[in-house]
Image (cartoon, rainbow, N blue to C red):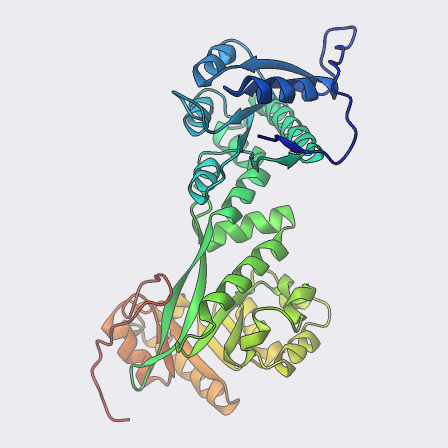
Length: 410
């Protein structure tokens, strides 16, 4: 089996270690039961400046890890006895800083998901280019060393292990979160008839600590990776919704997504169904920070998209977008919906909002509805659509819904 695609000349003669005995680029443990693959990989890494130790299987690798610290472990997945996935779990139990790169000649979705779920830094399919391995090992070593340095600094400063772990592994964990991301959908129900009006796409991830949209968005903001997250959601939602009969598709946008050129690309998957798409702007940061935001939204409307503003009534943010964007839909913040049937002040506020929205030809959606009392009150106050656990929890494309209110004449 060929291990690499040879795209450049590489001297495979063993490299000498620096005169002081310290590896110039880092330490690596290569694990593979195939002698040829293991020795070739080790020689390549040695040639490029790494101090390399070889292990013939998972048990041998764990013995080498006892009392010795490596920056990176490069392991085959398919090995007799302890395979690469189990080895990865054992390594994680011993050392949370060492980075693990898994290789396989028989890639499958299941092994890729398992590798990411248990914290692999990279999953490589053989054959791969030499520069791909070199780049992956180099980045893994840098991350491992940074993690150890910051861990020591945090220990001296008295920072908790939880805070350190959260800060150190964010980039790698976010990559795993994107790799394991998926969409759920929650129905939006017509308040008069109880029929399905649309579906809101909600992103989730299987990566621990990133299961909620808020966690994913927070990490994306810190890492400047909002475009990656937004594109993933829009593409997946468009694929799920194409050809369905589920009314309108509500897709969340961070205000920063308005600056992403892909959002305006006519050949994107979402543009193909633009007449059925409502772009729901969730204002985690002020819409006014986006240059020419009103003009950008006007361009999207020309493409056929409609616009919704989320969290109306949650203070300045929602009201600011309401006035600035003139949306087609507004969604009431859950803080107004909760126990509205028992709170006269909330009823007065929502009544005023629905009246204003009606005068401006905007439809109001009450979200976060959990009880029949909340749903009935919102209907009486003029909410055209309702959304919440009372009707359906989020589910795979596309969940049905209940209509507990019965039919009434309006």
